[in-house]
Structure formats: structure tokens, C-alpha cells
Length: 146
Image (cartoon, rainbow, N blue to C red; front, side, top):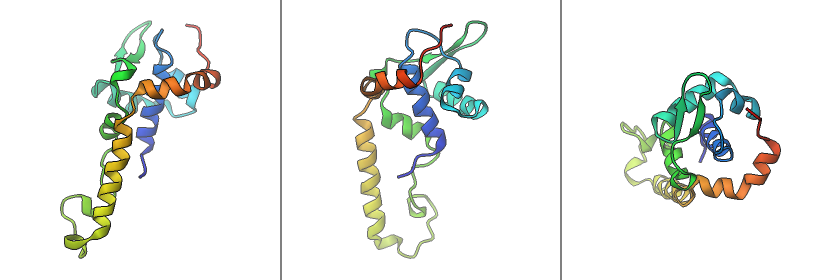
């Protein structure tokens, strides 16, 4: 299974916000910490806001914060929301042209593998990710005084 850069950035942003719960964080700060494009990250954050994972406060002194507690943000839900498609191969979508589709054993195996992948992610919350890595994340991405 491959997740897009969009989903990767979304998970990184959520983890960073989860380690910075005592203050508002800017998109610029996250972009600089991870060395990613601010413009791309802005699209990611807007999707996280629309999905209800992040809250954005505009204006002077504004910024980003989690819209829910880390324990309420399920990693599998984030991945499903951020990924444009969960189709691993053509036959997962509509209009499949593959001649093997009616009796394809590979499709069955890939369907099971995708379900197992998502099942593991559904067992994890942002709290699990932040709790296991909080010290390391803070060490490499120290908080900046505002």
C-alpha cells in the first residue's frame, strides 16, 4: 500500500499539532519544520479543516489547533479522508476492463490486504502516535516561543 504525499503531510501536521496542544501553530511553522512547500501544506491543512480534524483561526494571533482530542482522531479515518482513492489496482474501480476480473484471485488478495492495512490504522489514534513519539518529535522539532 502506498499513501500519497498529501496524506503523509496530513499525518505529519496532525502529529505536530498533537505535540503543540498548548498553543496555536502556523502553517509556515509546520512547513519550515518539515521542509515542505507552504503552498502544498496549505492545501493539506484546508482538507484537514474541512474534514473536522483541525481548527483554523484567522487573523492576527491566529493559527491552527486540533479540532478534537488526539484520542478521537483515528488514523485510519484520516487516511481514508485524505487519500483520493483507495483503489490499489484498476479492478477496484468502476469500469474495469481486465479480462481476469470475474475470477481474479489477485483482486481478492489485494482486497484482503487493503482491509488489513486499514484495520491496523483504525486501531490507532493520534494519541497513540503522539504518546509513543512525543519526546523524539519535540527533540527534533522544538517548540518556538510565540
